[in-house]
Amino acid sequence: MTIHLISFASLLHKQTSLRSSHEAVLSELEKYYTVKFIDYQDMDKLSSNDFKIIFIATGGVERLVIQHFERLPRPAILLADGMQNSLAAALEISSWLRGRGMKSEILHGELPAIILRIHILYNNFQAQRSLFGKRIGVIGTPSPWLIASNVDYLLAKRRWGIEYNDIPLESIYKHFQHITDDEVGASCAAVASQALACREGSPKDLINAMKLYRAIKKVCEENKLHALTISCFKILEQIDTTGCLALSLLNDEGIIAGCEGDLQSVFTLLAVKTLTGKGGFMANPSMITSRSNELVLAHCTVGLKQTERYVIRNHFESEKSIGIQGLLPTGDVTIVKCGGECLDEYYLSTGTLTENTNYINMCRTQVRIKMNTPTEYFLKNPLGNHHILIQGNYEDALNEFFQANACKRTE
Image 1 (spheres, helix red, strand yellow):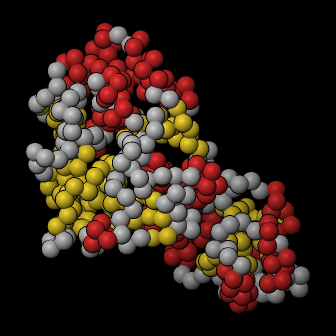
Image 2 (tube, one colour):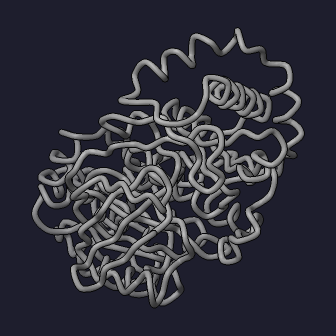
Image 3 (cartoon, rainbow, N blue to C red):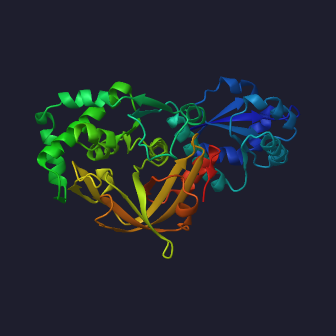
């Protein structure tokens, strides 16, 4: 991990004493990072992939910093240990920058706290850079009932650097038709043998579901996709096969895959995986009990690796093909959704997964969550239908990430 310290120091300050004046904070930084000092005049030589901190080394540099406003890294992270009037200068600079719409914060105080904060900022920076250039395939079109889940491709690219790519369903069908039963036999046997039970679905259904997985994966390779969302109900109409198993296996392999052509949810899945390394469960809020502050989430697919055990079922709405009933571990969970046409809003909360339910009138994978915040959000101000569950408490990390990207939190 490398930090590039863009140094601003008064001409009245002797450069030879710069290090000794700030020995405590600089020595602490060097315990955790490779620290490279960059004179402010050379900051243009740094690339967008370089993590930058503005080092306010002395007072009297306020005018110098604002003269280089257009060249400063965004957000502006100012390091000021207080020596040589550095904190006074940083306060003035930060106020001026925020008045011009630039996000800014000052790193100052106890050294362990500064290091911890830099870790968070560095992880956010790395996640944001990792998202840049990611290709999301939109295979088919969004389901017609997702009337509040649109994304403006251009605005999303400007904000996040991601690219949505429209891909016709015919590309899936073409590959599907050429995959033989023998090619997927061993994979089907492996999935079936590891299941807790196979309650519905014939062997032929499982074979076709696995063939669809292979077909989608080929399309991902051809189009160099990092993530995808697919018109699974259209596929069911055309080839009588659901995408539930395919999306489950793709997510297990690190190819982020969402259903129903939901543009906002697939981005949320991708952002969550990039920042936390965790796969998410994309689901419908299917039952809300405000009195006990509980939420039941349900869908017919979940990554097999996210489950403790799983049951092979059929698809809930159609009662056809293959669905997955995953049994998830109890414990802390995070519920998140990034919404808005330019992906600039988000919902974020935590809770406890208390049980795996088994209602006959819901999608196959079902979990009950005791929420840590009021469930009224879902009834009064929801960001659409689908929300993402991840195992563990990642509220602070995700909140920092979305805030750093100027997103508005919805509660």
